[in-house]
Length: 187
Image 1: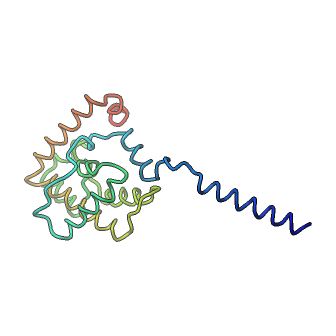
Image 2: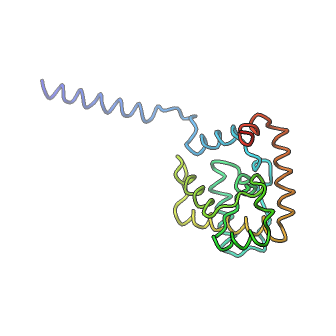
Image 3: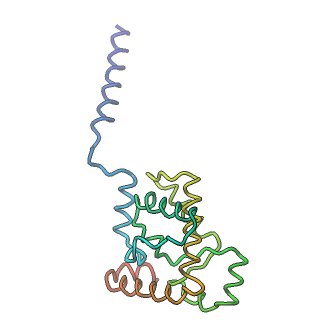
């Protein structure tokens, strides 16, 4: 009698497990798809910019990081989000040099948000999200690309071009998503 009860409980448990695992909603979004849906519902000005840039003059290492960013990061949000971000990640000595040579860059945080380690924090946070399949080595390559690309396209001779581009994105975003603009920037 005890054997019958044992096997009945075992069979019931196995049947329940099978039904739970294999009858799950096949149309339910994956973790990455759910993150992408969330990102699309909560846009940023960055999302309105281009999803690709010209990297032909970048080193092979940076080009590899760019390709990884396009492939891996695009699973949860558009590539335009990091490519058009106001973030500028500088080493402390680069920060001091820029403060001396180009102090106007520090006046508008919506155009340039300059912090040491900001991209490292963001990439680590993204890697910790459900469904993210970026390993540590890939994360470092993406980080290196984003940091160097930000310096190339947002400072020096490109600073004025970047400011115009970013201000255009902000104006377009404010028109297209006025409530979201208020939520993000008019607190």
